[in-house]
Image (cartoon, rainbow, N blue to C red):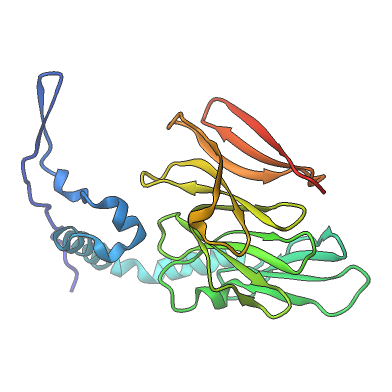
Length: 265
């Protein structure tokens, strides 16, 4: 039976004073004071907030139930206009051609490569297998080492956009036992493969600090190489096509600049 009565959030008066003027917010309680920790672990959300959100979701599901048939029809029509098993154009890098593709019914890409002079194609990352059993999964990025033997890859499995970086041995498809946490998702190798450059997200979800990580060491020992002091800006790392420079991109919605770190090759 359709539930036509929407849940009503309880009013709890909350008063703040700005420039001598009182501001009343009856729904301030719906923002968890512990929201930074909730981003890292959604289970920490306060029970009363979770209960209200779940009631909203239940009401939405109930009121939309009678449209389920047309929803499914529209979804299938949209899928019919998309090539589900689409693949990218192979991109040459060193001795390999790298590409990605999707399988019918899958939501995440397969990242693959094969030798330029032929040979069997190998799957480096199977996004659908990595996402299996998780309520949420997102690739952040994949950076192949200059010798093509390792990859630094990142993922978010909570929807928080705090990405974890892992290091994979491509010959054995095994990941290292240590990782970098709370990153912006991107990573860049130095040409000598000793270092990884990445951007750290702070507690307020601002990517303002760029670190250099020595591969194989703990994250707490990483070296800060750049910090943006303007909290209205965003930063990220990249690399020049020549691999001679690591780039630090600094931007907001109106302006941008690129800083260069010279690396030896």
